[in-house]
Amino acid sequence: MKAKLIKTESDYEAALERIEEIFDARPGTHEGDELELLVTLVEMYEAKAFPIDLPDPLAAIHFRMEQQGLKPVDLVPYIGSRPKVSEVLSGKRPLSLSMIRKLTTGLGIPAEVLLKEPNAELPSEDTLSYARHFPIAEMLKRGWFGDFDGTAAEAKSQLEDLLVDFAGPLGRDAMLASLNRQQVRQGSKQDDHALAAWRIRVATLALKEPLPAFKPGTVTEEFLSELARLSYLSQGPQLAKEFLAKNGIHLVCERHLKKTHLDGAALKLPNGAPVVALTLRYDRLDNFWFTLFHELAHVALHLDQDDVEAFFDDLTESTNDRCEKEADTLAANALIPQREWKKARLTSKSSPASVVAFAEKLRISPSIPAGRLRYESGDYTKFKQLVGQKKVRCLFE
Image 1: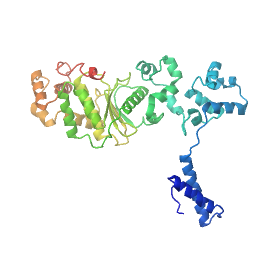
Image 2: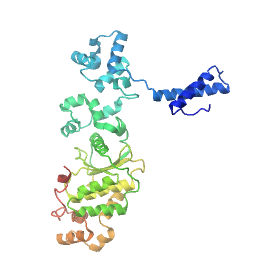
Image 3: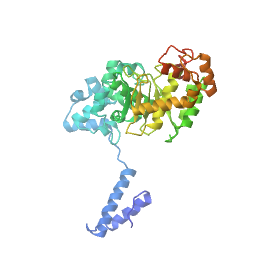
Image 4: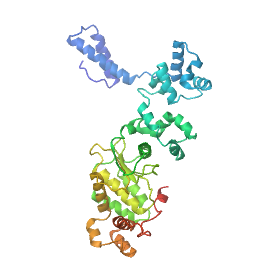
């Protein structure tokens, strides 16, 4: 019999028959080598086809108690109070991750047994140590912990369990492990822990949204020009989200946390899909469109390059960083082609009517040239009636 991977029941039966035929083969002979290989292949097939179920967590705890002669009171250091021990042992209270960690360390019961998941591991201590600095009270206030309705103090005490639900399909350590693969455009002091919490929140929201697969090279000048024309419509921001979604790009709007000073971010999910996240901290159309295009420029130019998986931007900050300058330039030119901008010769002293006429010609929102003139002149008192104040959040909230 020619040895090969066992994929079917008939392959399995044939291998067993051959093993029986050469069972007495001596090691080192041709048949001995064949026997050794067939036994290995059979074991591999059986492990996949007939997996052994993990023991029940409560049965494992009772077994260990019997082994070590422990009474319920002896579990208080691992589970908590006597009432909690009684509830856990009777199946009325589920094991929390903090309980599982203590039982694994103290009684030597494997985590995968208590978690009821083969090869499962508890969150690393580094992850927990980092997450304890998250702005828990604010996250709780915003409903980031799902159905949990306890106090901030209770949330901190149960953080290990809440963190698993919060990080969701990203994996318990996946996001925190990649935080060094990011670039932050920011001059003022920031809270790195708040930034990490916001990043996880944005990514988990994006993962809940099923989109077609993103094709690298999608974000081109033509793509951005088509997107810019959506700004001409009153529901432009919502249409932009739909347009991006059809092309495999997530658009998430989530308010920034204190001490993060963010306008937007571009990042990758574990599956490689790009996410553009906007905070809408300035509720204006001009800010929405420029920030959106700046982050899309990062998707087109920089994600997957230089080992950077995320860019975080405070666009009020000037920068000499090459990547940020490239994103600024592409965003500005995609919204208004440079040749059209020079030809128009608009200035901060131009009339609102001339700015609107220019926007009509390009079929874009007048907020875009108005915002550019305000930025280039540094005079943010100009064209207030054109920048679309309070016209964005209402579309997403």
